[in-house]
Length: 628
Image 1 (tube, rainbow, N blue to C red):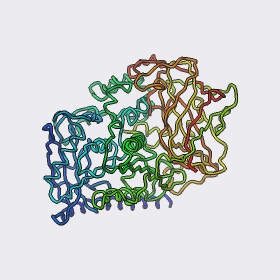
Image 2 (cartoon, rainbow, N blue to C red):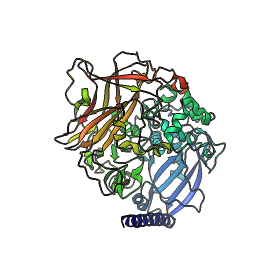
Image 3 (cartoon, rainbow, N blue to C red):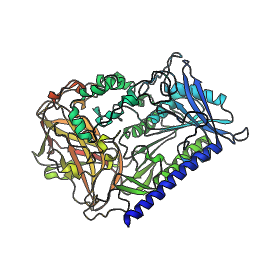
Image 4 (cartoon, rainbow, N blue to C red):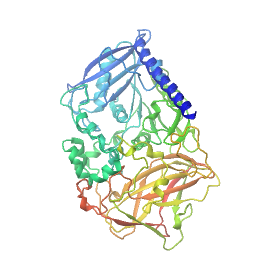
């Protein structure tokens, strides 16, 4: 009976979604005219651009532009083909804008040569000095002159890689550009997506054809498809049998981005030129940076884009929005909002679209544009209390900085250790790495997604995973702001990785919610990951100039886990897990110093014993910010 009711409910939902998509496409056909252009920019390259203009636009009814520039295709191509939706949301689509979509240079129907994370040129000396900012400036100039009945204002948005293009394009400095919303933006590939603190995100191994094969000519086809491959369904075994990273040359010997990655293992000039953050100066128009607390791809990007803009441009309109979402999931309403097993409430994406995003764009593109939007500086979702919170500054100015100290016997509390000698040891064997997830299907996916809030009980029972846990909380504890891991360690090897996880441990009487995606999961005793990050010890002093670890020496390791806003409720516990592999999300460290890990041999991987110190004079801890 229950299965039949569930099946019926799913059929009704599918019919609703299909009906909504069909309704949206019909609305677009009835209310928008489509035109395609090849817009020339200053170096003679032509950028393919599709413009959807409201049919009721006139000299008396003018509309602003709302633009997205992307490397992922602006399809559908062709005058008679229309997309199932326009703009960031159905709300803005029906509010009507002149929607502009552009293939960035070197992608799909645009001319030119494409490179990953186009280096920005601050001082352009001639027409051949081009970047995303100059392409955007020239595009805006053309649109203002050639698309009728515009009101002279331009906004832009994009999610993920298009989020990077939004940030980079914002540096165009065109006076008509009034509002930018980079969403899940990549900021720096040494910390986003393909790397975390320099460790290679091996879970991205399937994506390299998309980013490392150049089209022979402008095309509507996905030219890179022939270079993609299908691994074994068991991604853990596939990656383990692959061996060292150099063996991926079997698939990617002709992939320019893979070869660039291999040849630049440290944050040298190659990566520095592709870091957009140092260029975010002199920005005068409005920004709304958006992210998801459970974004496995780009969490560093939105947090650091907002903070860098705030630091370098104190007088600009700058706001941060982070919700309980995975990568880009705020752009689609799912009804019941879940990430993995965790239910956060209903229609949260719609709330964001209608009450935050639409308000931002309408104010700056159609209304007064004076910055009096009624929106806060930071609109953030507390993932423990499961409710939106607003702040006039982020991180919060009066947050209390405390340290959660590690202790013997797996204890965790705010008191510094007093023991003269107290350590916990474990053996890390690269041939038997800790899996980063219990979902083996996820390991063969295009990119990781669910692990950011996953139950960690599968890991905590392994002897190569250390567990530190508080007593049961007697009152709510809200961690809001930045988190730093402060480890004191030694190793028998000459290099090591450390993967640190902040975990919310549910009480033993926790009840399952009504929308559990997997009926076999129980929330009683659930160990929900709240935040995690990896750090490669060779980069402890410099990402540009790595250095070996001295075997047997107590060594300091400090690194950022990225921000949180999470209330650990009364009756819960706070847990920290420490391990040295999270495979195949991140590549394995050979644990002996190799100048370039991408060129390590299979024989270079060695077992090592790691020691975490939690004693007077050598305490290990997690530095947190507490909001009262």
